[in-house]
Image (cartoon, rainbow, N blue to C red):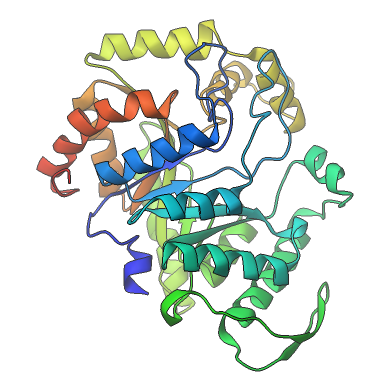
Length: 368
């Protein structure tokens, strides 16, 4: 289990790629070089990332695009089957499935997770989400619960899954939401352990869920507010210790890296401002009820959402990107899941220029 928790890596700062299972990735842009999200490109990317020593691939659980000229994220690969396929095509990298608990029966889910874990020989991870997008839930005929109740359901759902992973004998599960009878499930996860579990709950309730149940929590970070992020990390870890548990903190970011800072800023402006798919951005903001009337910083939020639906914007030359990643590590984060406008085209430059800098900073080993 120690190897799973460390994502099979001794690097102090773990790195992952976020959102590659979706068309356009996380950049709401119209530029022609945006990410395809195709299966062929995902396989090539996973193998490239593994060769570079990247620790994990993290998908987005998306069922319906956001419209606009590009139908942003309109074509997506389902995350558990995506993970199983990538695990079969790789040897070392951890691949997560991002799963909406209310949309998948826990007994089916547990079996799917074990199957992927057996394929990857212990490299499957679970990212549990409770969902916010009512438009997607309507596709399934599922009513979204009130915020607090979403986590009540997710608690039962995850409890049932963990029981299928650990119980050899048949069992019943008699919860408020789930009534399961004569449950039996074999095989178990690989090597008598279990998949690493992550969650990205931002509310106090969501964080409480992660502290009780998960090995890692994704927490947002604002550029320039690294001390504030460090305080957040300390608070979550202290709450976990009080509960008799340990938890790692990760964050998400969007990297635009070029040989010079001026080039990086110009390309960011070209993709994320001059050629943003504003129709899709405004649709997302409307779904989240973010308007000029409700948010005085609406224009800044609008640009922020065009660049990866949020996430820490990291824009600069290799020295600047490495320095910011170093600040995240100093703040106490164990790792970061990053998005690139075109993952396969941009990852080689990061491997060549940024990863060696992180190695010299003592945050990672030299490139494989």
